[in-house]
Length: 208
Image 1 (cartoon, rainbow, N blue to C red):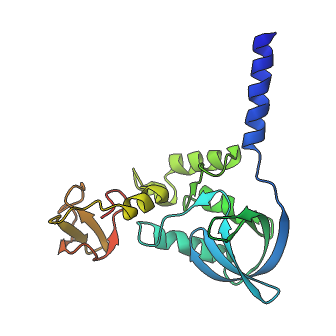
Image 2: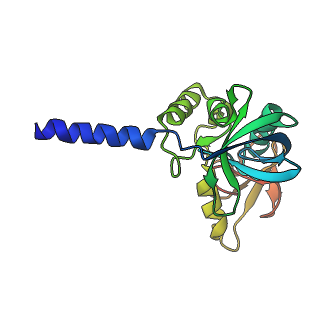
Image 3: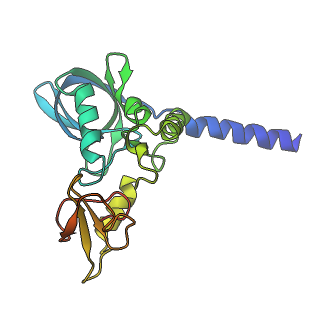
C-alpha cells in the first residue's frame, strides 16, 4: 500500500508539473515586428507589447539557424491578428505568452518544425518535449545539424571569454559562419579564409 501511495503521489506531481502554464489574461492584436524566433511585437489597443513566446528558446540572431528561425516565425505571424494567451512576465518585463494564429499554436509549431528548442528550464509541458523529440528524430530545421548548440549555452559562452588572445578563426565564405581553431570545421570547408573574431556569424557548435 505504501508503494502504491508513493507511485500515485509521483504520478500526480508529474501531471501537475507537466501541465500547460496557467493563462492569466488574453490579448488580441496585430504582429508588427518579429525580433527573432521567440520574440515579437504586438500592437494591442495602439500600444506595442513585446511578447516572449512561452516554453520555447530559438537560436540567437548571430547563431547558425538564427535567421531561418526568425523567418519561420515571421512567415507564420507577421502582419496577422493574433491572440496572446498571457502566462506572466519575464525578468525583462516582456509579456510571456502563447501566440495563437487562428487555431495554430505558434509556440508549438516552432518546436514542431525544428526552429526552436523546448525551453525545459522554465516549462515542463510533455507536449512540447514530445514535439522536440519528433523534430530531432526527423532532422527538421536546426536539427539538420547533428549537434546544434542550445541558445542558453550560446549566451553563457558569450558572457565569458571563450577565445583567449591569439586564437585563430576560419570563415566559411559560403555560409558566412565563423569557426575557432578548436572547431572541427576550422579550415575544413569547401570555401573559406582566415578571419578575425568578429567576422561573420559565430558557429553554433564552437561559439566562433
